[in-house]
Length: 397
Ligand SMILES: [Zn+2]
Image (cartoon, rainbow, N blue to C red; front, side, top):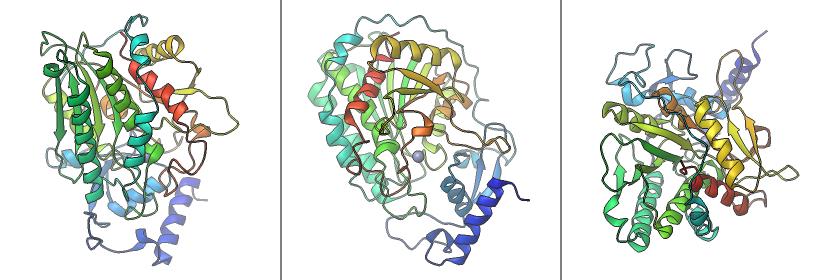
């Protein structure tokens, strides 16, 4: 008997092969305007942290995604290394290990009063208006350019005279169409050796059945994107100046195999930057009807000490409880969902990952045309505000 997951993959392959209507069954696709996507292109991917990298076609990569399996695409590194089983990320520099005192910030309460659902709602309405934010599409590129302009506008309008010279906003170009964005707020008298705190989310979206079709990506991960953007806006309004560098990372191409976050984590390793902690926001708006409102705290592919700190922060500052959870992992293959914190974990940095709720209660519309804010009251901006508060107060150490 075939293993169930193999059965599922075979079934998908069969269905795809039998139907010319199913786009994943089509041949080479470079003929859709605005997209750079070739189903037959070979990609080197790693499906789980402990499995070897393997060559698959773009079509096979997308079929795996349709089954709920994430992966790390080694695209960025293919030209840098021979195609071996040795992961490149994590081998470039040694990292200090940080411990985290109990959260005792006195500034958090003041920042929280500036947060609201108004701007996140408007920003998410805009982000979900793109046909797709697929990372190698023109609309994917446009969405990252709009976000960059929005961040610059907030900075110009809201940053205080003291903050202005401390803030930089960088659009990071990649070998694909969509850009990543890095906002940095430096402390006064910054040193290169200052440990950096990183808040992350991903800009791109994906239609799992057909990357050419509509993918509004409201929850995944427009919600995380506007969540950390609102935290940034709140810190600007509050006039916050950090004691060590604070960065907001908006990654391109998470759905393409954590491509943007891997590229940035790799560049930080190469530059021997010190990162005190990285927190990823991927899914912050969906609250399943009939379930307790809570924040889930992912415990696999993260740093235990930073995760315990995150739990203390939630206890101290949020109105809703936390619950520990894991991304489900196939016991035989090690495959399962993931997000950009995994890039930082793999690079040897300490990361953590709160989510909108337990994986069992997850948004069923993820990676479909129905991942949109107007389809169900389960898309809750009040719930998102708790996650924004979590983003804002997670720097309170
Ligand atoms: Zn996703």
